[in-house]
Length: 452
Image (tube, rainbow, N blue to C red; front, side, top):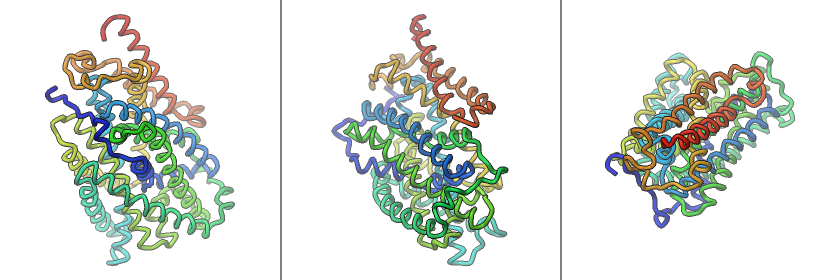
């Protein structure tokens, strides 16, 4: 097996319960980024935003269940599973994509939590908040504090991640009920529903679909990283779907109504007001709210770093998962400073969502088509580490998967230019369908040519 070895978790060693799995996926979406995405799609208006949120999320998490089942079936991580479709060496492509996007999500949540730290430092030490002259000091301090907390939270690998989720989920539930009450005391729900988006700020429905899809699909490539630790099929399929959907709808809903409520009370809509720290401050929720925002960052980033670490371990097979997690946490610390260089967190966040939607969809399609339609739900786990075995293809790379991914990326760019799609269904899911069909066709062609 050598340097391409993998670790399959045997069923007798799997300890993740139904509740742990539910808490993991609710906690994954009970975070600052989800809150922020709710505020971004507020630019569609309440009714359209809710339809997009529920439907786009549900479709995305069907893919999470499909990937989750493969992890349950094989006991290996998603990026190790990608060896079967991309080739043992070719799996470095999805692994690199996964590392970059989960480090990116860690940075997103860290930046928002660091903003909360800057508000705390303002209240406690009278430091200027970020966005005001001299406010960078508080933000830098917040980034460093959050990065240290993240390293502590993943210090023992899967066990510490599970502990963080168990504690965090309780605090998250309490906080969200509290904020929901405060929001609806401030602005009646009927006013939020009837609020009209200023024409210059209106977000196209298809663009909102793509934004929500990119946000949710990011979790799909982490699915098997967690479901390989459960011995129950439902805990690998139904529970991740229910937990992730519940978490994203609830938290994005709060971000949505909070942003609209501020737009109503201030008379100005600004997507930057989606920032949870800004919302907590304007709603007068106080220090406790800022502390909970920091904790939700830890619960979400425990999942982000776990996924990034698993991908790093697929690239460097001799590296222990614990060490991979530390590397991911350190890299994420540096990436968190990027919005400070760009000058706008919203611009950085939007560009990041475009990147995620562009590169992830085709990878997910290839993996799912390969397992369910090409391999008929059977993978030879031992062959996932064999040079010159059935998943070696040509020099360790399946070029059909690379072609399908490359075409999918190009299609995403092209379809985003079609006005009809951007006003309706967006480009992400159509790109996934087309790239999946292309992969299946190329593999059938290869079979006929006898060049597997």
